[in-house]
Image (cartoon, rainbow, N blue to C red):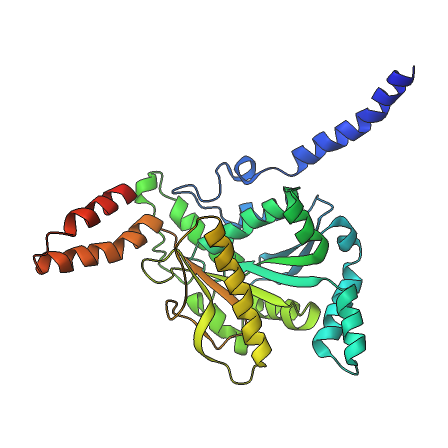
Length: 342
């Protein structure tokens, strides 16, 4: 009788676990392909639907931060531990108090910091033809919502992550244009119109005047509502021959910044670079190797999308230079390296 009772007791728990698995599908289950698969792009209609499916998790809260210029809802998915999600209002207040620092003594500030959580902004899709940005956002959301390893749980317990789509209209336009071709080999992102209404690729240049609704929506979250401690902004196409470009940045840094802001960004970038080295993932470039300087107080990274093609470019240039000099000793080695990459 007791065993039967325990089996009956376990049924709701099993049903809940099964319902959870059905409620939050993987990207492949939702989109029909893995994020990063060749010749496959998701549009914003599909991505917005995935935001909503992930919002079923008790680790998340879905926020509609406003309408876009073309009338789409712009979503931000907040991800943290279930306990933190229940107390988001308090953590937002703490972040605001620490950012404004009005009337706070050092002791009070330290007390608020000890109570609060780190607020981390991660956006994607700002420049819509830089398609990695929007798609990494999808994969990052899924990983944070579903993983149960010790490192992920530690992140969720100590951080509040604001995962925000920066350009819904652009993703819809670029992805629909790309995927219109039935033959994958004919797909290209040469869209013949602006992929954000009025401003196109210059949407990030709009943030100092905020003419666009998307800029207003994002700035409200960044500088009024949440004031995150880290703003992580994704772009594409780092320097040829690299896989990823990021901080520490080259000089000059913005002279109006407190030096601690600059060195803190350097520290985060160095930690990223170190982690990639630990995992045997080469190709990170920084400082003079990157095209960016420290004029903006953000964690800005550029990743390449056509890894083999971009990585081979400098090798091709070196091959031609060697051939011109009739130096045949290194040419076979470089050709063998190129063929191995292909």
